Amino acid sequence: MAEKTVVQASNFVRNIIAKDVRKGNNDGQVVTRFPPEPNGYLHVGHATSICLNFGMAQEFEGHCNLRFDDTNPEKESDEYIQSIKRDVKWLGFEWGKEECYASNYFVQLHGLAVELINKGLAYVCDLSPEQAREYRGNLTKVGKDSPHRERSIEENLDLFARMRAGEFADGERVLRAKIDNESPNMNMRDPIIYRIRHIEHHQTGNTWCIYPMYDFTHGLSDALEEVTHSICTLEFEDHRPLYDWFIDHVTLPSGLRRPRQYEFARLELNYTITSKRKLKQLVDSNTVTAWDDPRMPTISGMRRRGYTPESLRNFCVATPVARSKGITDFGRLESSVRDDLDSTVSRAMCVLQPLKVTISNWDQDKTETLTVPKHPKDDTMGQRQLVMSKQVFIDQADFAEHPEGKWKRLAPEQSVRLRGGYIITCEELIRDADGEVVELVCRYDKNTLGKKPEGYKVNGVVHWVSASHHLLVDVRLYDRLFNHANPDGDKDVDFMTYVNPDNLRLVKGAMAEPSLASANDGERFQFEREGYFCVDKDSTTDRLVFNRTVTLRDSWAKKG
Image (cartoon, rainbow, N blue to C red; front, side, top):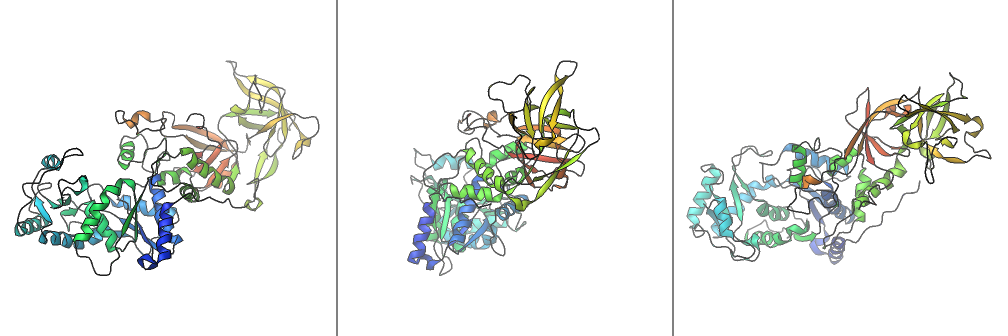
């Protein structure tokens, strides 16, 4: 099949980098970085940043560092680090021989903090967190200086050394930069550089009991790694003057290129939450089963649900990189997934709500093997076999006793084609004691295999499985996790209020064609006329479990 062309959206960052390369800025080199904090699993918003940073490095023959900004061991863990590495690799990107860690620079950062003290640009402060907030002021009220701001250099050096030696309790003292407490930029009001935390770090163990703050570490790490284009989301724009201040006031190794930060609007998807804190709340409250639950907007959750790395990359490429904020329709992401799966996955049949059909003119013990393509437009995928027998099952939704409108499926005295098989005509209904239709008696026409004789009005094609040759599977029908387009938009309403009560429906004992018996964990299929599905890791040798990745069409289009 011909490959679909993905149209690249506008990208002002690409334009900036291309101009720098043409001019020979940064010696013509491009070095970017993807710097996640390992305090949770990556989500779809991170995917856009990964594709942007790694994608720009690839396009301009540079390189991109994967750097863990691991300055807060209270909330970080190796589990998160390993999940992030898996996600980046799954998306198709490499970061060189080994990843970077902010903790690799702890010794250098400590030395730079001491340098600031020696220059009279940092001091140890004893204010409690509550007092510090009061002294800092707010957006309408300027801050005021700490009573400890004018400590001597000697006293500050002594106190900072004792902080490093572990003499003080957590929160008892901090090291702050001496900048401007009347600055209109809150980030410049004597920000904290180091705080005391007697806790083991996942990379450095118990070597340290003081840890640098993110704002102190981030820009300096960029500089130490000689990052040329530091690409961040807009919420870090007001932090840029602080990053520059630290770089301007410390002594870095000679010859290092100064990083330049560029901010873009983060991805905002409707019907989605991308706050790691709130995603963790979903996990901790058992609203979902784990970070990789297929309902989660995490990369690992989308992978488990059946999304492909190509579909995510294509979505990111087609989404504008801009300075202005905007909301992206979740349907665009699902459309990207459909486009990729439609051309790449094998077809199969699975009946979710079985309704028995007995073929009256089919011999009782007769079976017939039917050969059908795995993909209707790609012969290279090969073929699969179906077994036709006297009794088959179709889906209950494909039959109506009293059809209305332009009904295109089975009804009394009407005909349909069994996918890949014969045309059948409904002749009789069999009911249970309550009067419900539990079985259809139909007649097949042996002259209709692969062709349509004259005189038939066929109401469409339905999927089916043989009553004697099928596989019992469990199917998870996932829907959007939230039923509100902006679940985090009203600060007076808990976002959990908008959890969609119908976000998961479990179908146990669905009937699938036998060819699926050899399906492997993560393998994807289109269940004809049902949607796209993926084998879940919860599958066993006795029972496969399939996750619905996405429906065949956008069922939310009219709800928006």
